[in-house]
Image (cartoon, rainbow, N blue to C red; front, side, top):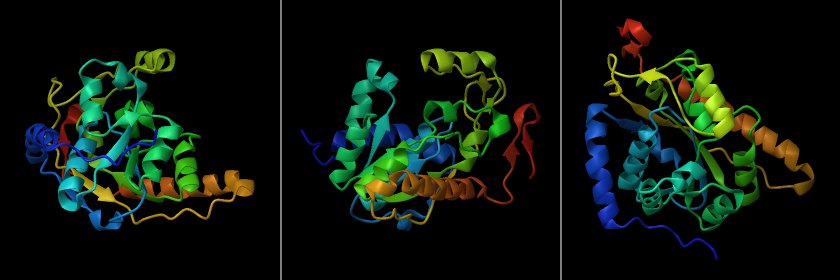
Length: 255
C-alpha cells in the first residue's frame, strides 16, 4: 500500500517546538540556504550525522516553519525496536529504512531525509571532525537516480564540536558486532551536557541526477554519489569565521 502524503498533527508540532525551542535558543541556531530546497516535487535531503543527532531535528523544525514542507526520514531498525521512541519517530514522519520505503516517499513527491553514513558516521572520534564516513555506500544515489529526485546536501559542521568523542576499540567492536552505539564522549566539562556552540545548518545548491539509464546505472550512481559527497565536504568546511572552536580538553580555542 503506497505511503500517504505525511502531514504532522498540530499536537505533534507543538510538542516538537516545546522540546526543540530551548535547544535552538541554547545554540543560537540558524539555517543558511533554505531557498535551495525546491518548493514542490521529490527531493532527497542528504544529511551529515553528528553524535548529538538532535541538530537534524532542529533543522527539520526550521524547514517546516519556513516552507511548510516536512522531512520524512529513514530511521535505523533500532529506533523502531525501542518502546516509546518508535511511536515518537512515526509521529514525526520517520519510517523504517529500506529502499522500498524511500522510493514510496519520493514517489509521493515528498522530502526524504537520509544520512548515508548512518550510526557509523555519528560515532566518528573528534580527530575526524567535519568529515564524512560514507565509505562505498551508494544506496542514496540509487534512490535519487531511480526516482528522478533532486538531491540537496545539508550539514551543520559545528555539531561536531558539541562533544569530544574519543577513539575507542570498544565503540568500534560494539557497532560492528551489534550495530549499536557505545560512544566514549563528553560535553561541557566532564558532563554529558552539550556545549553551547552556535550551530548553523548549510544547504547546498540542488544537484540534479541524469535521466536514469539502466544500462549505465553503475556509472551514473557513482557520478551522482561523488557530486553529493563533494557538496557535503564543501558544506562541512563552512564553519563560521571568528567563532571559537571546542577542542577536547583544551576547551575553547580561537581559530
